[in-house]
Image (tube, rainbow, N blue to C red; front, top):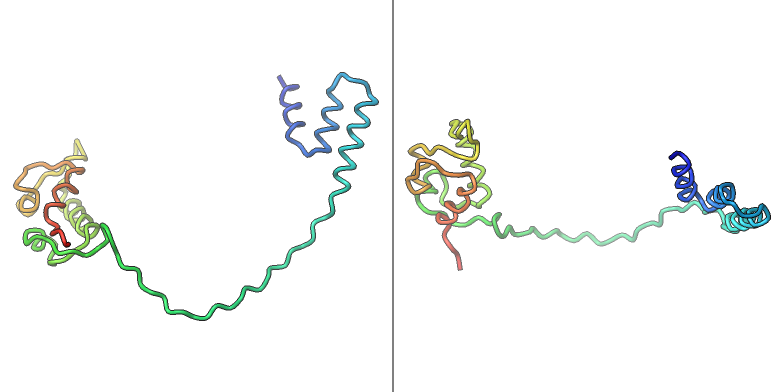
Length: 153
């Protein structure tokens, strides 16, 4: 078993080492192994040593004012329904901020089911957002919140 690994290492080694290792383990005549070793060493000798590279100075770019990136998608601040606005304390919010605030409320009031963390028990404040349901799955939160965001055209 160890002979297999030795030959494998020899194949992965540098060309000079690979040819000498191959010559060492081959069953052919010693003359062919000597020529293989010489050709491998001559190839390695032909390569010129690498010159140290110095970093090129970068061209100075004129200073341009950066434009601010407008948030879009779930990061875009949009108007929300009155029920969600009362819960969040603002009439406009992004979807990510709304979900974060709802999860903070759920965790601070310990409303997750201890046996099944995927279920959330709704108190009176959450029932106003989640259509009066007693329990909501955590994957349903996004679906239920989509009803509260006003579509803007």
